[in-house]
Each structure stands twice: as C-alpha cells, then as structure tokens.
Length: 94
Image (tube, rainbow, N blue to C red):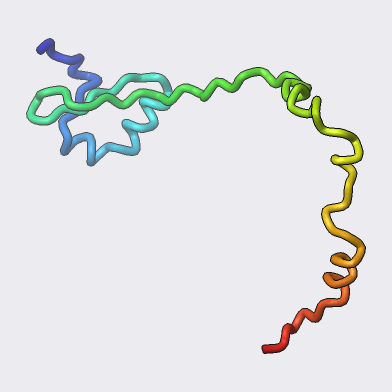
C-alpha cells in the first residue's frame, strides 16, 4: 500500500488528541488520513452541501386534475359534528 502524505496523516492517538483541530482542517478543505500503526484506515474530508433540485411551481398540478373545487373547499365536519365539538366539555366525565 502506498504511503500517505505524512503532514496529512495522523495515528489514532494523535488524531484523538487533536481531533477538534483536524476537523477544522478538514472543514477548510484539507483531506486528513487517520492511520493505525502507520496503516491508513480512515479519511476526514469536508462534507459537500446537499444539492437540492430547483423548485418548479406547479409540478404536482397533474395530481389535482380529478379533484373538484367543491372537494377542496368542503367542510371536514357536518354542522352537527361541529356543534358537538364546540359544546363538548373540556373535562370529560369518567
């Protein structure tokens, strides 16, 4: 296995001791190699920002083709159910 750059390679003990500094260096764009007994085991690299697709207003409009305006504006409860809810006690009896 090829030897890693010694200035960017840290053994586990040294990496644990200076972990905060190594994280800062990785965040700044540097690649840090963590080695165990001189053998590279892991790599600290900066996270890339998750790319989000561009918003496209109306892209789900096709899902509403079978929904009428009446369905959208209809009440969720009947008048009787609303009255029961409005007159219900907040302290139900046992």
